[in-house]
Image (cartoon, rainbow, N blue to C red; front, top):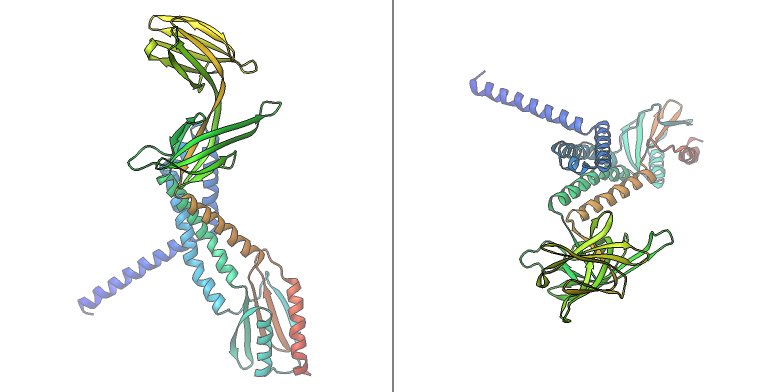
Length: 426
């Protein structure tokens, strides 16, 4: 053997080993038991992330990303291994072997069936919805058929659906943006962090809330106007579990809270503050806020004391300490140092969550594909049959999927086949 021939043979053996190793790896990744185990681990991981206070970090850890990568590879390997076989089986139905999971019936035939009789049997199977292929010839012939063979092909799409869902989740994780902002009626804010050329914004027009006798909210409706380039682009009603959608952003009403409308003026009547102040802080377990009065060199501390009586506590302080404090109800006014403070009334602020997730469409498309493919595979299962010539008659073998037991179809087909060959065998 020449040196070049030996080198070529060595390269060929190396290529064969690589191909064999790749095939074994593909078969291992395509194993359904591995896929189920990976999904169970992912489910437990997500449950732990939801239950633990710092569980969000678990979903961003390298081991979890490796787990998602394995699920992605398992789904693609499953399709790569099973799809060609399912397509070949649908196009050219193989002969079905008898076993414990098949239904078998014997049809008595008194004489040998000729070509015309076999053609009648083939036509009858096709009329029953089977894609039929004849095997063999002479006295050793069989007719194999597959009904709804495309159902198995559709079932394979469930693996691709998991791939799409993972890609959508990964895309959302990598490229999504999330912003929260609090607004009082009449105020507006950008839907995302400010950047060059970005003008999409939201204005809160009206907030309508209604509460039951137990204090729980019965209605939390926010009327908002979306703005683009400073101009109104549409009005929406944002409700619980019914977010507003604009320019790829989903806007949810996230939280709400009380606000007090104050009017602060100097002793000479010059206004210093005439606006609502959100009580978006907490002091001693009560909603609180601070209002700065730079021109007066003073800070007002506001705390909601009694929500039923609409009573607040106002504390005025400057650089030297507390100047004065008072309790106010709507319509009441109190002099505090060099200013007068009037509680005009109460209002409410609403905190919005604005989220843009480019992977959401892919995620929901994968979920829809998963539901549709599994529904089709379960409700329209594949069935396979083989009609084989044996001594003294025909052997009819029928097999459904694991969850399908086609006893009724077996009896119906046997009766039709018997009727079809009776005139021939008479």
